[in-house]
Amino acid sequence: MLNGQQLVRAGATFRGRPYLRAVRRFTIAAHFGRAACSDENFRNAIPSDLNNAHWPAEAGCVHSIFDQRLLAMRKHSSVLLAGLALSLMASAASAEQYLPDVVSKAPYKTAYAQMLAFPSWVSKAEGTATPVEKVSAGGSHFTVGHMCKPHDCADNQLIVVFSADGKQSWGLLATRSADAKVFNKQILGNPDAVVAALLSKSFAEQNPEK
Image (tube, rainbow, N blue to C red; front, side, top):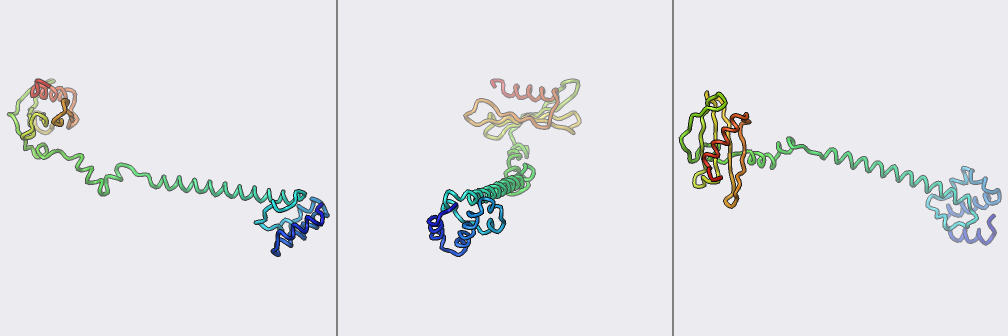
């Protein structure tokens, strides 16, 4: 139970009316024991911002009230943090993009088109060339041609194979930088094994030292 000096100190600490009302109710609660802690009016009389460090150590019931409020605040904070995490996850999911979406918009669309574009000497067939040849492979007939980039023939070459009726074509584009020793070979037209071998054979004939 609180003594007179403790009540005076408590009253001096809390000058405002809400705190004085709490001290008065606390005095009554102290006389009736901790059972007063279950009294709803007494519980509501404790200011929400009251620091339990100002109360005497004997006020066990008051400490329990503050503990309950602290627990409620912690639970509320946990709910808020969980909601924030879910919100961030939803924002990240909505920000996800895929390649077809990206390349349909500027500036990616232009960059994508440039990546797929062939050099003009290839797309316009304006390279230095040798006469085409008629060859047979795998029981089929083909027309094979070779072309290279003007003034840079050794490092930029194109081998093209046409079907006998000229309705299909396949290619091998071989390029390399001036200081490189190995060609970067790009197969065009999805050839089968017979045509792929024919492309490789033609390239080897054009580059016997490679």
